[in-house]
Image (cartoon, rainbow, N blue to C red; front, side, top):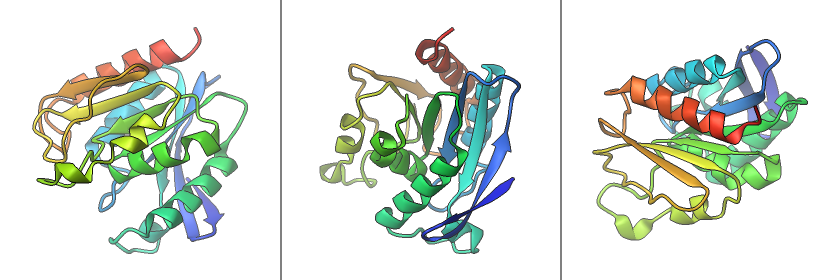
Length: 195
């Protein structure tokens, strides 16, 4: 684990490094959760098995012990500072769970990411489809994988050119079928990374 100073305070990056990595995947947590969420753990293992190093990033508000997330602009600024510190020679992929996926989408162009992995992307607040966040996904011009539970109350974004949708058993927690998550992540990494 390393600590990174950001404009919003200290963030932490939990590193899972592989030898001769094909890429670095930087993942953020959800608004009220942490880096030990089951889907983040599963994605990390799938990435390692694919020869990809992973950094799980704890936002400064979580490091400081707060449960309520900072405003989006502060989350984005802290994320950018961490990604800049972690960047190496290998291709960069970004992503996360829920709010972490939104941060990765909003900042993908600035980070120069070669792809974005979204776990449980919150398409809209439950019962409020008119408050869609689809624009955050549609703004991306790199390959995207969205892994969504079939009963997710936050909605399911459509697949689109360059955007792969993997609907798995379960709900927003993505705990019911971790094998399907691992397969989706492994297949996507194989497709987006050079051999």
